[in-house]
Length: 358
Image 1 (cartoon, one colour):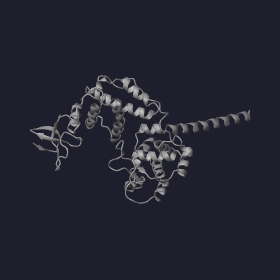
Image 2: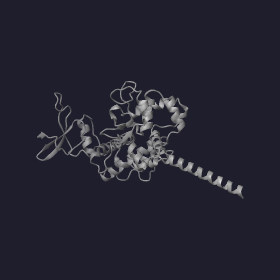
Image 3: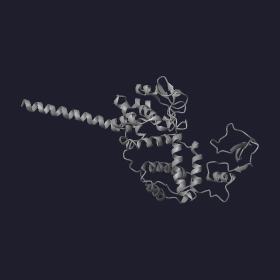
Image 4: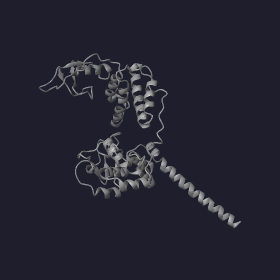
């Protein structure tokens, strides 16, 4: 038998797993250190990597001792993740990261228990334990809904796991920052956190994309996120660089790589930047309750104030039209309120004039 990498029907195989074609059929094997002087023995694996049995056999080949069940929650989650490239509705890289992170909650809660024994009551109990973090609870529920739909279709569970379970209220989502909060941030944030704040405020990008922004992404007076596009969606917006941001950027060091770097001189991850922001936020009373993601809504609202249409804003920020409408709901309410106040004042003045004439 000889290995053929071209036209292999498999993608994203785990490390150490390789496919070999013989007589028109593909076979999967595990071999640690394949092609090196320290290569280990080759172990035949089940031919379908989208089943729990494959993952159990792989773990045993990797040296896990003892019997491993094929029907556990861990095994089903493993099979679900490896099936992502084959799903009819593709998951974006960002969604995959979110699902992986929140499915770990399921692993921690029920990992080695039988998947077919799971019921909505078990999911509800975890949701209750996360009630003090409604955003995390809702993301966990979203991941479980996706897993449940796939597992039910593939006969890994017996009942829908999220039936009847609703989302927690999250206080209306991430609200835009007020003008007072923006002023406090401009005055009191320092260092790399201030630079990251400015990039978020003027571009409206997510934190995961902001930490990537650098001089090489500037194209014709705007930011182009490159062929990868946004981390979560893959959308490739062109964000014009506002004059205020351009003036700030002119004072920043000119070097390759991202604009902002951590204390070790390395690129930030979104999480580490958030941690740094929260440390400074704790010392600035005016920023209590502000979230970095709220700056995405702030940027959209700012563009709305300039009179841009929702579709134009969607193109600039790289956001779906429904999300633009959602993020500008606060700005629309403010505009409606101001318009109503003007109408009331005009009517009161008119009535006052009519009474004076009478």
